Image (tube, rainbow, N blue to C red; front, top):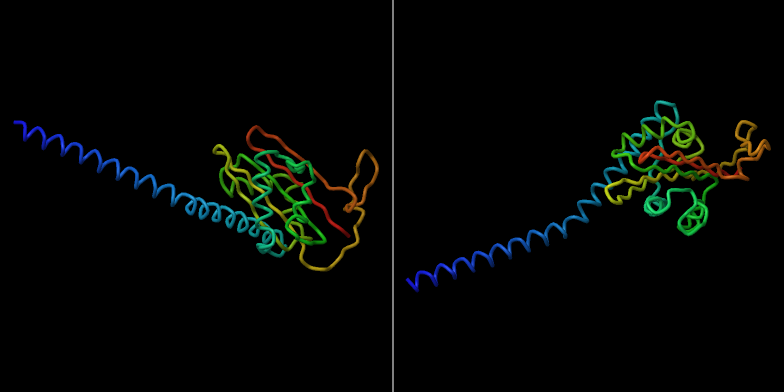
Length: 212
């Protein structure tokens, strides 16, 4: 009996050790694979946003935007910053446009759309297109490059779109492109338009700065 009991206890102990080892290996694999899986998923979200933007531009008869590699890191950073301070003023107190200088991106025209709470590319693009200000960035002929950032915080997706003009052509601002501030016309190159809309967890913001 003693021999049988000892063998049974040893077998139970061996099974416990085996289960613990398997659990450890599974946890290790999950942690190891999670970053790459998350990166792949984030990339697919960004690509789909750009695809949907170009669908809308095609409908409007506007040339498609290309993903600008110079903007990718900047867009990623703006999405992360939006999770800490949802504004065109960055967490460090500087204006949104400083992200371009930080990543050494030069352009005659720059724009930004922000959003959070939208759970899919289709939903966020639909929300932006439903807003005249955000739609104007998406459909603007002044832009030819785009980058999209996506950041997740506590299960909430934060989205950024950065727009850029790579062509060296300069345009003279028309009267329709002037902005009225407290009743005084202000040229588009003298002010950065900012509009924030807070709709519970579904919010978005837009701004554009062009040099003419």
